[in-house]
Image (tube, rainbow, N blue to C red):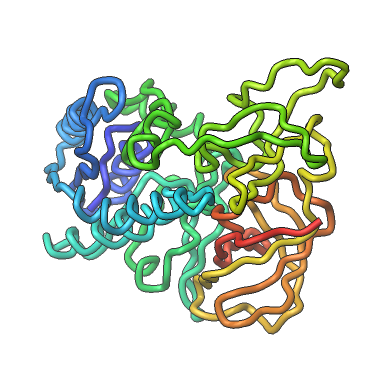
Length: 357
C-alpha cells in the first residue's frame, strides 16, 4: 500500500513499485479538519491529484481520515511544547504516529503486507536488523524526520525514491505522463499546510506580550509571546533603529520564561547564538539499543538539511545524553531534534533539552 499524497514524490514511488512488479494499491490520508479553508488545507485538491495518479497508474485508491489520531498523537504534543516555550518538530511525530503507525495498521487491515512512501531515505536489511540510511539526494534527504522509526515499522516500510535525486524523480514522472510531474513541492506543517504561522498558533496559544531585552538588560522592544519565537530568528522582531546604536540585524538568543522576556542580540555571529554542547532527552535508537558505550564519536544534525556535524556522545544515561561538538553550533533550539549518524546510517536521536556555550 503506497501513501499517495497527491504530490510527485509519492506518485513516482508508486510508479517504481509497479515497474518492479509489485501488486499495489494506493491510500490517501486526510488528517486535518479544523479549518479546511482554501489556500491552507488543500486536501480536496490533493485528493483530486492522488485520484488522477491512481487512474493513470491503474491502481485502486483508498481514502482514510486520521484527523482524530493526528490531533491526539501529534498536534496535542505540538501545542504542549509551544506552551512550554519550546520549538517542536511535528513532522517527526507525524511520521512515527501517523504515516508509519496509523497508516501501517490501516494498510495491514486492508490486506497489505507493507507500506511505501515518497520519503527520500534508504532502508538496508542485514542479519543485524533493519537500518535507515541517507538518501542519494543530500538536498532532499528526510532521515532527520524518520529517526523515531523502530524495527517493526522499518520491517514493513519501503522507500522507492531512496536512490534517486529530485530531478530524476520529476523526469520519471514526465516520461510516465503522471499529472503531478510539475506540481510544486508542499511545505509547511505536516498535513496542515502553508499558512501565516504566528496567526495560526495564536488560535491555540494566546498572545502574552513582554519585553525584548539585550543581554545587558536594555529594553529594545516588545514581543507578542515567547511561544511565537525561535532561537536564531531574525524576521518579525520589529526592532527599529536605536539612537546611538550599531546598525546590525537583531536575532533571538534566549527566552527567559521566569520574566516573560525575550533576549535579543545584534549580529548573526554574536557569541550567545552559539553552543558547543547540548543535552538531549527522550533518546530513541532505531536498532533498539545504543551503538556502543559512551563516549563515542559520530555526526549529528540539529535541523533538516543541516550538514552533518562531528560530535562526541558522552554521559549516556538511559534516555538522555550529552553531545559535545567539534565546532560551535548556531541556534541550538530546545524542542527540536538532535539526530545521530555514522557512515551515512541514521542511528536515531533525541529531543534537545538545553545547550551550553
